[in-house]
Length: 188
Ligand code: FES
Image 1: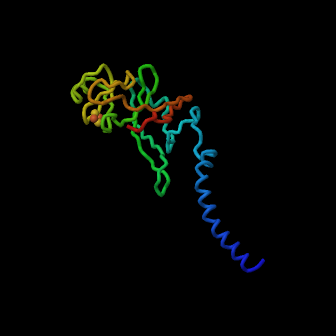
Image 2: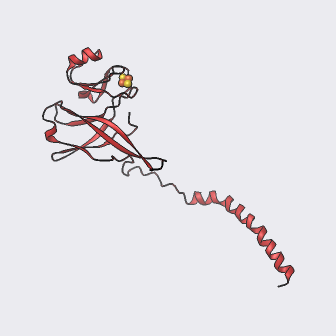
Image 3: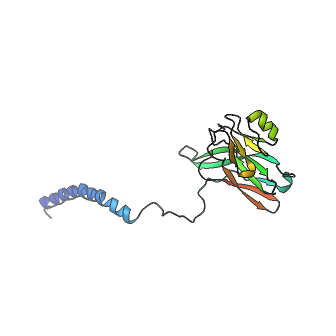
């Protein structure tokens, strides 16, 4: 190979590199289309709700009577773009034993504007403090006086709240009553 031929080869190779790079850029969307990096939608897979940081559970004995109401703190771990990679959010809740014997659990974050509501067992106390006389025990918010009827699935019976508070999934195994996860859609 003469010196002129090898120089020409070198120049041709140098010219081909940007061309190959441009070609790669042009075809890469087609390759991504053929081999997508996003997984297909898994409709029947397990819930993608954030997992609790630690188990929250009670014993059957913790609820001796109907309308026993116990507070708890549910901590959810979210993936976040921060140095730790996660963020823990604390959601206060109430677990209540209904007259049917079932235990239900609700987030205490008021769906109106996010205050923390109370459990009010006595209808007369609710009448005095929240300007509404309910038929039985309720959740009642001190900020704008929304009242939720626990016996009616948390239905709003007074005040400006747009909907019932979010419910937790409750699982009963033998004597153990576990608060599993919060209803999807946010924490308030
Ligand atoms: S925040 Fe509870 S009623 Fe407004």
